[in-house]
Length: 359
Image (cartoon, rainbow, N blue to C red; front, side, top):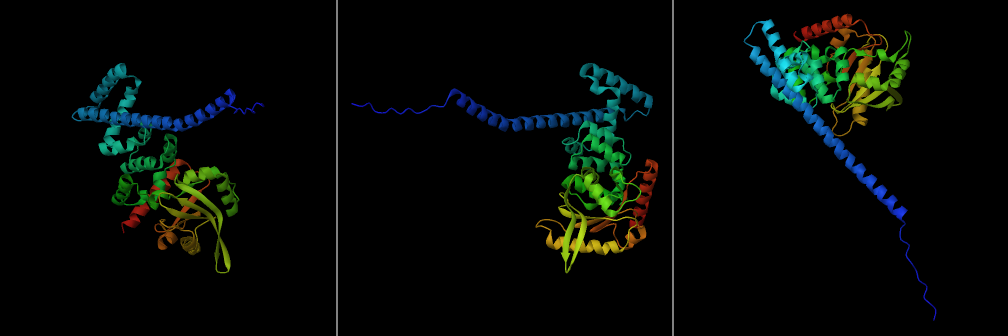
């Protein structure tokens, strides 16, 4: 009798099992990592928020204690002794200079609810950059923009040094209108064109020589697109260069097309050498109508345009009402003037704009 042919199933080798376990464990670890990172981030954010609130409470307590004392020497000695005692018990975070920061913090941010909201995004280092700014609206602007756009401390410092507030239209409005717009940003995260667009734009990083064309300017912006986006604002996304628009039997080309997430708008940018010309308005209006008809998506706001010129003609812009509405005009600076000159120019522009609105 023939023995039946015995068939033996091959079991996976030990090496095969190890490889399978290794792959499965790596996949499992990969799914766990985000949980750990997110938890760490929440813990760090919570610690930061509690620290900011603690510093505010300390500053408020000391400020209230010293309120009845008119003697600067008494206040300074009191802060020094409080600082010395706290350092012994709790460490160098309570050194004299930091305690003075806490007092200033409580004085200029006197609403606990606002501090609590801001502390969810801004660190103590952010607040130190903001609290010594002189203008309350300026402080509110930088605090809210840093919160909404999630600026790092370095970015915040650069924005302040670059006089961003003074370069926005919000700084040129009457105080009550500017405050209302900033409160809408604070309470509803409502971004407006007056908070987004600025004048002038600082494009010194392009490194252009004395003689250049519009194409040279466009090419330089695209080479330095990351820095250009930083100057525009964090919510801008690049879409296209030389956007072709077929209108009738002619082709037109828009220099640069962007999208702004918070505004939910397409942003058309035209680059011009020299002074602003009134004819640029009609050209931009044509581009905006085309974008509105063919490129605007459901849920988006109408497109908005920015004409960047080497120099503005203030009277033309006022007569054409291009200091508000769907088309904005701004200068660009390829070389930064001394800060004092830029500051004087911006403050004069603020004074004139507020005077114009008051008429």
